[in-house]
Length: 100
Image (cartoon, rainbow, N blue to C red; front, top):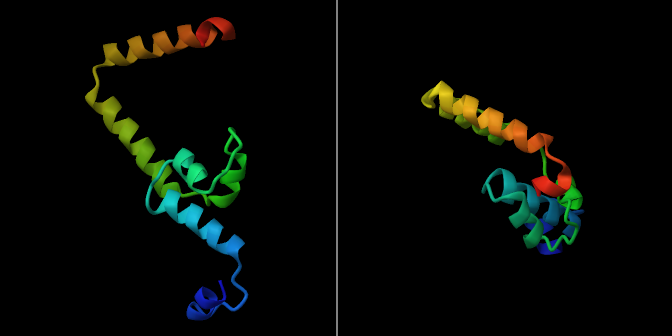
């Protein structure tokens, strides 16, 4: 870490800094899933709460997700959308044991 820190002119660079940068870049620049990032960082918790600490919020990804759904809705017949919404409501109202 001292060698990398010297190269970057960051004499106090720590391994912790490198792990955070790795996780953040893997998710937000390389666009790997949070699950893949968690595995790469050897995080064991299923909720990905530890991985969330490593990742900064990238609104570009969120904007792209929302734009893609809007494009899909614009291309989809209203009857299909209504059918999907109704089917999702039915699943949501089922008891937990039945729904899963």
